[in-house]
Length: 453
Ligand SMILES: Nc1ncnc2c1ncn2[C@@H]1O[C@H](COP(=O)(O)OP(=O)(O)OP(=O)(O)O)[C@@H](O)[C@H]1O
Ligand SMILES: [Mg+2]
Figure 1: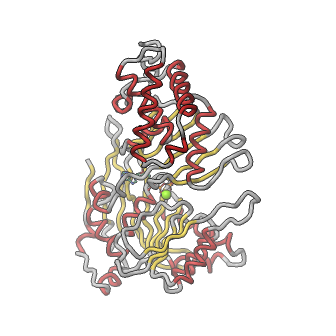
Figure 2 (figure 1 turned 120 degrees about the vertical axis):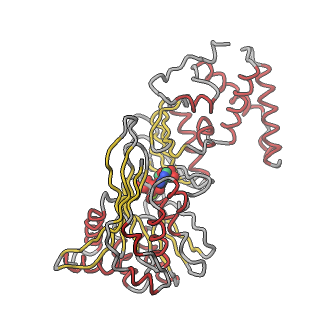
Figure 3 (figure 1 turned 180 degrees about the horizontal axis):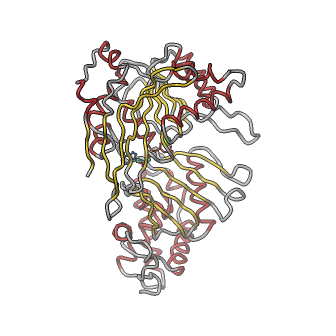
């Protein structure tokens, strides 16, 4: 019945629709198909007895609803093939129980971001690259309904008076929604998914994000309680790396984590987690990272982990690092370690405008031991491009020393980035500190070069 389900692709511009088609088992919707699905969905809501269903166990509810939808489909005048019947039933179940058209994308573990730009333009990121999908919402109202479903699940709301909202899905994925008036062409939805299993240090080595030697060094630095700042651009893998390296914190330490949207998944048992809070309807009651950092100091932490420093909290974080809470970890938006230093200076300056630049730098130089820089390359790969030590101050300038670098050497015809991980030959100043903590690294590791081909 081709009239309802259009099988001619309308996404010829997407060279990689293959995987999407396998996922959906179809190539596109016609307005008639959408209409049919919605009519059925409406009829279903009219017919089902929600009260009776609420007392049933989850699996039984699904079975009951499946049966009800199947019955509605049978009553439908439009003839549907068996495959089409199954599809419409599944999609209505997705509307009732899940996030509607987004469900197949959410169930695909290779999808890392879902980006709804308009009801008819849904993109995903896979392997570091963006692809347009054939997923569509019926209209703005449909998209808005799904957004409301996400935010109401976590006790938040979204409307004209608070058109921006961050939320989290039950699987830990981070959701951001922006609706009119701030969203110009209709609701916008961005979902950052986290794979079922967080990437571990070994996984990052396997993905060529760093070498084994670099991982050994980072493990040692975490165990020896160096204060570490992970820098990188948007989506370059900062949080992933923070998660991975935090797993080397010994199990007997008390960790306090502070985040805007809880994304960290620490392996340890003794973890006290805190999250910021947005303002309420009256615009008051917001709790910022800064207050949580100050609060964390009263919680007898062995380590403080801040998901990302963006603002004034940088000062409190540095003070914490300088007053015995070493071994702290955080991330920062910056394109190079030197740029990261500059950003820190600005953030500290925002917190205390009376501090001169020299004392700000002295504070930074004595607090931060190590920068790790992450980058996303044009072929979608994410790598550590710098492991850089903060050596100290020379007059008014903070001295940095690169220990490991990734150097891009070229690009293949297919767009793959070539390069090498190179140790700079410099043995870090903290080498002795690691040794004192019983972490003996072979000195020759600071001489290695690993080509990526
Ligand atoms: N080395 C890697 N190899 C492959 N995928 C990676 C790697 N590092 C991170 N990713 C994936 O890239 C995506 C972005 O990672 P992540 O959230 O850690 O980035 P981020 O820099 O913290 O982003 P944001 O700026 O939005 O906070 C995630 O889906 C993650 O699973
Ligand atoms: Mg992040």
